[in-house]
Image 1: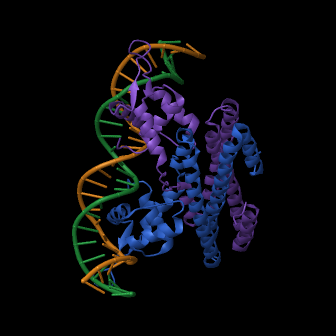
Image 2 (image 1 turned 60 degrees about the vertical axis):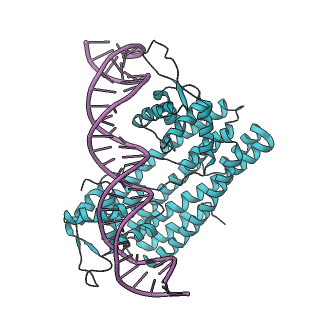
Image 3 (image 1 turned 30 degrees about the horizontal axis):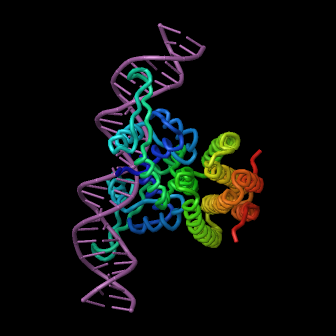
Length: 203
Length: 203
DNA sequence: ACCCCCATGTAAACGGTTACATGATTTC
DNA sequence: GAAATCATGTAACCGTTTACATGGGGGT
């Protein structure tokens, strides 16, 4: 399997989610790990073919005589391949945050647009925080007795903490822009000191 | 310019950084915006060619008679193109966090590897927090009187707050794994409640 | 003499998104 | 009967990374 992580994501989901079709795998990705991972159909279906050819998964007979969902099941060899991949250290992502980029060049356009972008980001983040909180509740109820519990909680906790931090950042950023408009750079520096003083500080 | 954001990043850096060569642009990207953006030489040099062909930048005469750095300067048309691009709403990135992915499938390999990955992540984050703190100091000193100040501070503040949040997450995650080893799922749930209670909560 | 940093560039390979094509089933 | 959703798949296009090729300059 020369592919990047897509194939392994599929294996992983079949390993913990049971027998699923391509369409269902996509849904799984969106709902369960959507806030830190994404896959498109254009990736999943070819990946399923490759995995089946490599005997890491096998196609199950379809329910309605050839029509409808075509579910797959992970094979022992597939579990072994997944386990090996999981052992290897994760590659750190190369960051590409267009919002931050446009804010960084903000002086070129002035602060009006920057405020719009931040307000928009705040709306998005609030929605995600709500979604995460709901997901968290579901995990606590459903995985209460599962060995997956710690791992599910670790991942939702990431969403919870970093989204909360981003929201705080958005709000502080709006305050900096206000300060700039009203009191210039000195006011900005005061507002900044205040914003980072409140933040959980590192040793 | 059909390209994605690379061309605009180059324009932006030439707009606020003055006349620079491809190599210097790369350094600029790494040092100033490296924690939220990355570009490789394989992107920058072709982008410079396209931008020059489109008259958005122009090549400056080289110092040492054709050898050494080949600096470029942004043209008025280039500034205009940059301004238009900056006005448009930023595309939200599709997240792909391999660390989180491997942790999510953690039950397949057990918690030993997960602890290694988290410890490694902590080391990386500590380094970045230090780098950010240094960058912050530099901005406060050098941009004190610049109209860029707010925008520079907004971007470093993002780094500061989200890295701090990630560090906190890593530490809490390690605690959850310990709790799991010692007291099972009930201990995990208690540790989780404690970890998120301390976090800045949303309304 | 050797190695590292500066510096510019090209080409292949790869991973991923998007658009397209197709059709069944369910809901309003 | 129309629209939305379920469901599978292909192909083109695009952006990005990686490897490669090349060579000057400075330090040990």
